[in-house]
Length: 627
Image 1 (cartoon, rainbow, N blue to C red):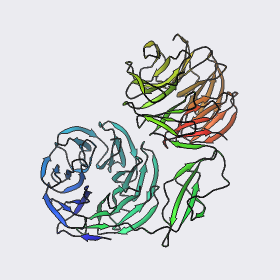
Image 2: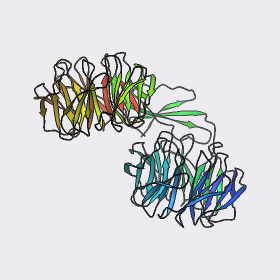
Image 3: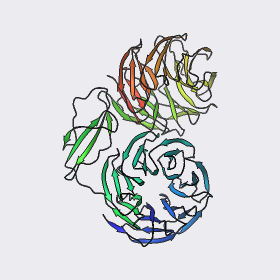
């Protein structure tokens, strides 16, 4: 421990560290903010509003923002403590605050169930409804805003423009929130647990820590720190939720901050009216234990120990996912688990962008991936090396297809655009063709792109230069699309009305087929012209002949989405919910079910018959998938 600092004021609560390592502390019962240097010396005392609660610092300007819960105002101070402005927006109980990359302050109003965005001059830029009794707020690297709602035990995720992306149930009385470098949200639940959510809001884990958890932060190593107001200590968790250590502090620790330059931990102790600064304990390791599991997050089995930098595990099963973690052992204790790494013998996983969905393979064997949440496209070599990542300035890339020249055609569902990108990643053209939510895309033998517009219930035919050659009505919410290479007919999966439409190459409707199952999602055509369709809500794949007759119904995994057919006629299906890939023969018999990554979504097959799968939950591509 470096020191405990008592400044003669009352109820220190919020704390933030500036770029010089100074701590700015809000004293709720004294209506003051103090600036304290790294040695504990008070550098300045500044009057703010009534009952100041939490503090955030604008990293670009160094300005300090303070929420004053007692008089419903927000104060902005300069780095020298001069008051720039005090803002009353007409709402109640401002508590949590965070600053985005544009210098805007996002403020949580607990008693009004609102979040407000304030410009650097204090102007209200937007008012957004969230859950019941919001408490804290954090902003991820994409500019998304995460809010804890203590009144209904949820977390709300807003976009940078304030639209609601999702609301996620967490533990009891969620209070503090912090975002790690992978975009995961960590929530301190006062009821005694810490919840870890993925960037898409999926619960990765819930970890028991103690009762009275208030504030939470993440350090540069990915370790998570949380204050425990009942036991008067601070817990340190590893990135997979294992408790590494517990540090005693003052009475009723409230807020916590970490100096990014020194790594020192600062804690405000509201009950004892002081501040604790300490250095996390570090003991050099003397050996390492290697653990593995077949499910993410354990339960782990110990594979062995080593003092070397490599370790070989034998006796594993091909095409089975294994999740490895390492612990360091020193003279005192065994440390917490390292970041988990998933591998599968016989296949590999390659990192791409966030929430990869669409996938296609060009004639060179390069793999093209649409990363829906990070708004870019990744190109991988056949060995999984990243060739390039291309951000074309639009949102939600979804479908992707490759033409005969090796150009990638990409649909951007949230921007209503179709873009054509050459093999080097150069944008050739971009068009908004006046319809909504372009999703699936396929290229015919003449190089024309056929695009399914999910929100417009249309399919458009676009020539290589981007000119619309035809617009054709299909079923409700068309998503998947495929082309029969022999006849040129176009098949479309209409998810909302449970039908499949077959169009001729001129766009006339040959037939619309309802097979009595639900949520057709993707579609692939075999060498005989049969359409193989995934039905996500029925956990089925159906084989439909060119006249629309069902030739077979086959059970696969849970929530099948993407589908592809290899040169042998075998059918590959990505099962999103149970994290598997199913391989069927051309007659529909089961060849095998193989582990993929987390939430496999799209699937494509290369010229060697290897299946490559996008894993939307683990932000990677698995391939090749083989038994």
